Image (cartoon, rainbow, N blue to C red):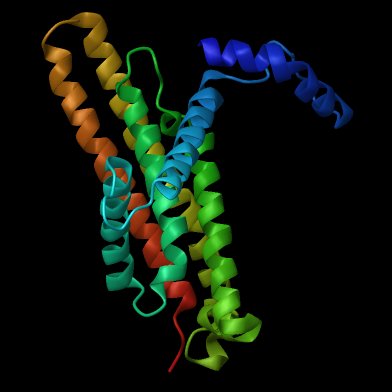
Length: 239
């Protein structure tokens, strides 16, 4: 990709030097790959979209960008409110950003010659780790260290020795669950689409492109839903 060649030409030398200083081997010509380039374009596009919405914000005459933003805000807000309940608003921006990033990464695979970043394991893993850190941080913030630890200990104090390690493992398993579910579905979708494009380049691939589009939306929604559920469980107060 042209953007990948540009990044390597402009920034490859600097990044490679930093990596060498850290004891890592890197070739300045291949520091950045196509997956990173697509992610960067999507992230830059989302930032530009949010800036455009902010600059053109209007109560009387909302523009197309604002109308799209309001639809997204309303949809994510309704999901968050039904799952998290009171105080969901402070988590809404994070949930929306995760959902949009995953969705656009998934849909980028519909472009001929472009591999969806979410079909590369490290990308779903990176987002899953971010979600894991975020919901645990919010859980500690909402309940305090002792209060949040009680969620891991369970209701019966003399079973702490058994329940605590099980809860810790189950939370770590959430990272794997988010990663594998998204990666496996998007990787399979990309492979099936590419195979049929190579075998029958006209007509038949359109069916699989439509299927890829559907899977992309469903997987982004599931990722958003699980993120919201994990947040709701983390910030819940014991009564």
